[in-house]
Length: 323
Image (cartoon, rainbow, N blue to C red; front, side, top):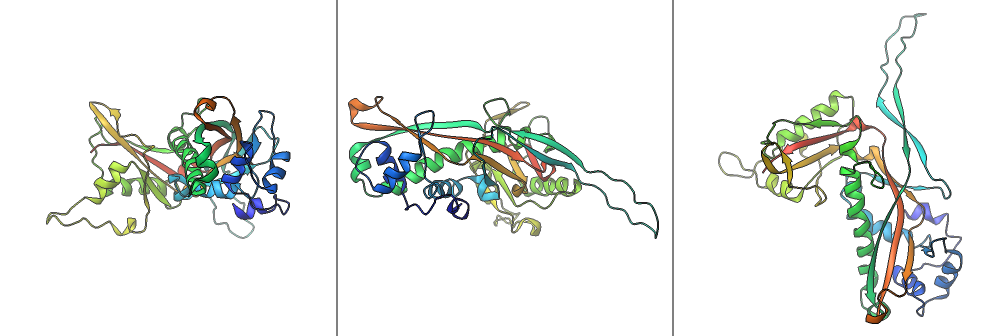
């Protein structure tokens, strides 16, 4: 993030999130913030976050996003573009040995163009004037609040997004992603065989080994509590020894499968084969009147983003995991 935005800051001074919000609210702030506000307005009345401030927010977002911890990235989108068509690999070509002067066997890869059109993602929050002006630790708190709000929404969209506007399409609903379903009533307990079967499906599809697995917190705790016949903690299979297991509350634990009503899912994949296409700058708009009578200041945070999965076969969803 720092490397990308360093080329766009025109040697501007560092602006903290707190100082920027003070400037948006019309409070006393620095000359660097005033300069940023003078060039950062948009049509909706918001202010684009300065280039040197964006890495602070994106860094806080990445540190709590299960998908980014697993290897997914953020690709900033050029200003002015409304959509981008990305080439997706559905099938890799097959190379064949040939004799001298022998014909080369044709084997076309299967490509598919996926249109990525960033959708609007927004929330607002309020803070008291006194806390914004004088609060200790307010900078870290603001980074966490803004970063986590966006991280939660991006995680859900990246994993389970329906693809029905305005929600992006996530892994679960992407064509070409392997769906593993074992029992009609969701009777598969969380165990290491789920992961081994998922990896087998990926390798059979000529996909790389997974970089991580993502699951609900309940599933991670249950896996951690597995024991052998002597009631000792169950050791992971060697193939899974270095596979990160990441928990996120964005995966539900109340899914209905047949007669069962509290099922969940496990996601495995090479998460470097997906990314979030995001507009260059987060926009922050002041809500002037909404909380004036309580001495609070409202800020509306807005960004546009979409999910891009470049190799669907590199992902597996285990659907019927039951406690």
